[in-house]
Image (cartoon, rainbow, N blue to C red; front, side):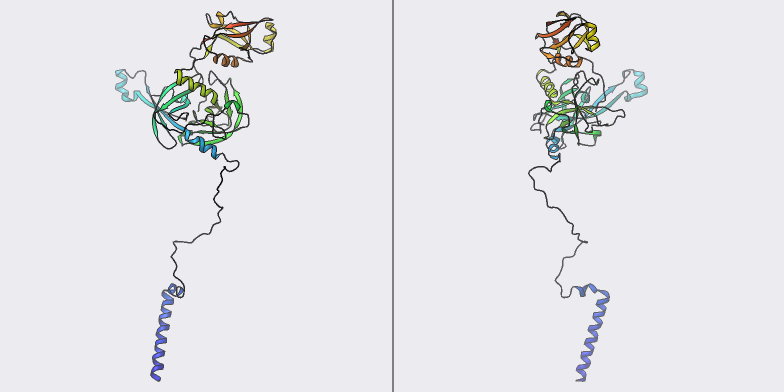
Length: 388
């Protein structure tokens, strides 16, 4: 019996010794005793509260993401390259001292809008003017060489084409239905950082006399427009094209919250003319003019409060051939009231050459209907402005 008790005591002592050794060196072995095996974790697991995924048929109220997603694939980045030759590049002495430095390549940056699935694009004329090479980059990263179909410096628009099919053409909206306060998005590639969307409202309509283009009827917006945005899209909250971003008003060169876009209606008309005719055909009558002020009306004795007063007539031009002369006041063209010189310029430009039109003309107190046959407007020199 004594031997059995001694053997029991030895086993208990040995087991206690093993227990203390394990407890000291491998305590985790004791934690798993009696517990189900667990998968080891790489680190602490955080239990975060998350809102359920939105399953909405309509975009979140107040969000403009639907408009941006619809229009963005139609807006492209345009890079141009122009070789500038020094006037003395062919001089042997110049070449000896300067070598290849005589010819330098200048690059330009802008944006454009896909207007047809078969590769026609709209952009600004100043973006591609004089370019030797034009590269168009789509939103999906594809690049194409573009060729110029036609340009219209008087509105600062140009039409390009790339060899591609099934492109995401933008939907052209009704810019004549825009109202001050409407929300708009400006989409383009400012500073070359990549496609960017900014938002704002329509600040004003029919802006003119800015000295940017010969024909001005700008949409003014406070959406941020910066260098590289030129030729990009101004779209409404449905993602439809309302204008082509063209210029900003700035004293510092940066965005000051006053941007200008060419209305989509004007851009569409120029697009069709350039594609079908290769040029834009406008009417012209050949007169110099000033706005009719109350002082001028009183001095000339005319019985009308709106219109323009002719200050000069081009010899053998349409107006001269119709008998108009300096001092005459034009109040109507084809039955449409004329209020200022810019309005007469735009109205006459829309006339078809060689198609006679009735002008209401005041000479002193006497009004008469004069039949004028417009000619085709000659090319004009465009003034440079704050382009973007």
